[in-house]
Length: 404
Ligand SMILES: Cc1cc2nc3c(=O)[nH]c(=O)nc-3n(C[C@H](O)[C@H](O)[C@H](O)COP(=O)(O)OP(=O)(O)OC[C@H]3O[C@@H](n4cnc5c(N)ncnc54)[C@H](O)[C@@H]3O)c2cc1C
Image 1 (cartoon, protein in one colour):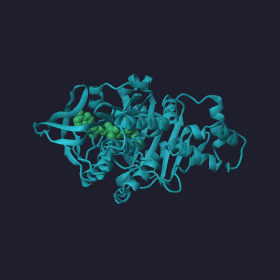
Image 2 (cartoon, rainbow, N blue to C red):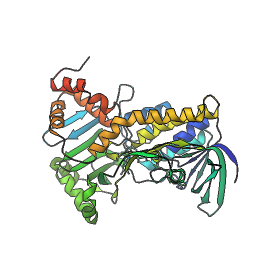
Image 3 (cartoon, helix red, strand yellow):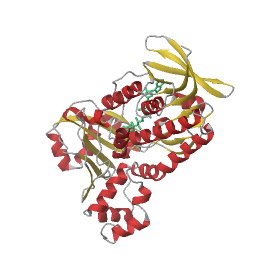
Image 4 (cartoon, rainbow, N blue to C red):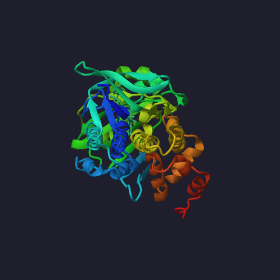
């Protein structure tokens, strides 16, 4: 190879493909590389929150997703044992979530990038980030059939996930880091209809959740504090079924269902990375990662892909200096997720809520406007800083009607 592009994007899933699609739609010459081929799976559950669904609609891709027969999710339930909070996670414009298999969602995104004019190379692994005079100028690597390649661009985007090779090469500043808190495993079950609900169960230091995906299958995930992982990894099935047994009504439904797949699992670190520098940028998990307990990764990846494509478009088009556009990208990302990051890291400990929080949860239950707000906060539709503001908490505790 050796061709020149405006942008090379490494990684073609939830962050990379939308970034490539949006830049190609602006007329830039984009090369999108992934060592994987599509369709293919990845270790991740896949609740796509209402705001991410709204992004798919904005990009003209939602009809393609709904055409795959993925059932919509209109209600999130949070079962704490003594009471359950059940609310609507979205907005009037974006009312539902979906839980599409990554084999289907990621393929749809890669195809949209190719359709927009990006050159897509599947089965191409980047082994090296090329740097000249302190500036990233391209990548080199190999294809599945052993062909070596090299490509150059004004900008290399690392959309290559948590173990980002691009980030490893450019060594960005990493900040506000927190270690993995939660270990969880999931599998797909048949015969477990969900009727449009994403159900969450909180039982002491165990958490579980279930959502329906394609082909009549339901994803069921269960987890425990990562500190207990060493003991539990020897008997994943026992630990998983033990967690679910703490919610007897759900366990009974499960006993009538059938597990169709082996378990997959993970525990992930939490971090922010500075997402840009000379000749490079990061998007998706490569630049920012938070525990999966709040299922925000795809939503974050879509939003940041859109922001990055906007900033890169301005910089490459000469409307703004790269540094200024990327500083805004970083600032907007960090401000947007600040309270969700703290909320997520706290939830992921599975520690019992402090007494005031427990009281608040009890007061939310049964009051529909507050339950909708709680579901929206957990979905990332509104920030935790808004739902947990002193004013909103006071209104909930006072048993008020919906604040006007
Ligand atoms: C257990 C678990 C459950 C989760 N549940 C949810 C959920 O319910 N909802 C949600 O929104 N998010 C969830 N997430 C988070 C979500 O999976 C991620 O945030 C999302 O996948 C990030 O997308 P990405 O494109 O940044 O990275 P990835 O999806 O990790 O994609 C990176 C791509 O880069 C490619 N790549 C890497 N290195 C190279 C290289 N050197 N050369 C070429 N290609 C390369 C890989 O092949 C891969 O295809 C979960 C995560 C985990 C671990």
